[in-house]
Image (cartoon, rainbow, N blue to C red):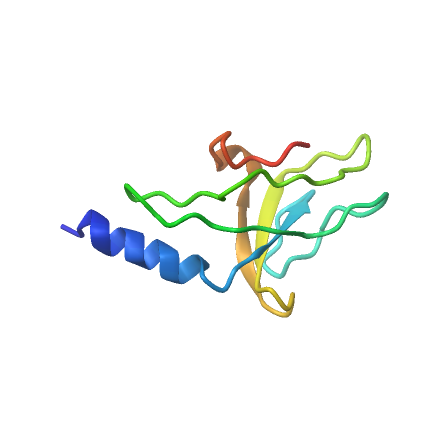
Length: 101
């Protein structure tokens, strides 16, 4: 069995270089379908240390999403915005790190 400590280390390592978050209207393996318009922009996320096999942001992340836009996916990027790390469905997140939309 993999220990909690090892799992926490894996989470911390995996997210160490992923500090930009984006919102998307549909799935993409490359980061397309990103929300556009208004003053929307990718946001910087600061991660808390992993604990109990879980990883969360250390604060709220506010996105200015244009009216009538449905956010379905959340993407993660490196800080230079040159490497798209992947995305997951918005509803799979806990409400503690769900950006207001």
